[in-house]
Length: 207
Image (cartoon, rainbow, N blue to C red; front, top):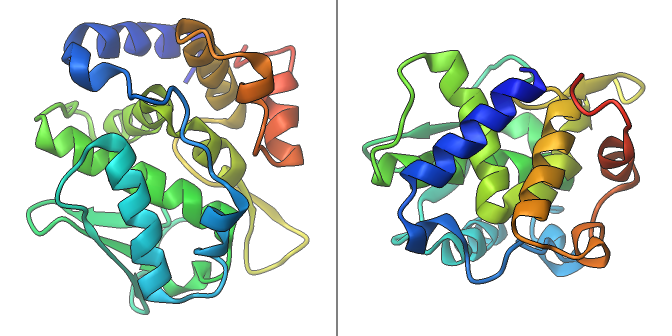
C-alpha cells in the first residue's frame, strides 16, 4: 500500500468514526516493560491481562478472550485470527514468548473487535486487513504495531514482516497520526524498539 492509500484511509477514519471513539483519552498507548513482560512467558492468564489493558484503552467491553492454539497454521504476515461472533482471539503457539510480535498481533486482532462492534468493515478481505493495521495506529496502538512488524521466524537469522502493510507505510501512518494528534516527539519515540525507530526515521516513507 502506498502513501496515497494511507492518506485516503486516514481521512476515511476521521470521517467515519464517531468523535468520542476517534481519539482515545491518551493519544498513544504506551507499551511499558511491565506490559511486555506479560507476553514473555507464554502464560495465558498474563496474555489475557495484556488483552484487557488494550481493551480498557479502546473502551471495548467486554474484552475478547485470547488464547494460544496449537492447531493454527498461517502465513507469516497473518499470525492470529479472531472469531467474530464469539470474540475469541486465537494465536499460533509458535509465537509464545515473542513479546514484540505478540503485542502487534493482539493490537491487530483487538482492532478487528473494535471495528466489528461499530460495523466498520471493508468489503475486500485483503484491503480490510490492511485497513485494520492502519486503524490500529489511528486508535493509538501504533507502538505495538511498529515494535512487532519485523520479527524472527523459525530461523532466528531470518526476518519476517508481520502484518498487512509494509513497514514503510506503517511508519508513515504512525508519523501522520502523531502529527494529527500533536504528539510530542519525545512521547512518540519512547517505548519503540531500535527497528521501529529506524522505520519512523526512514526518509522514504512508503514511497
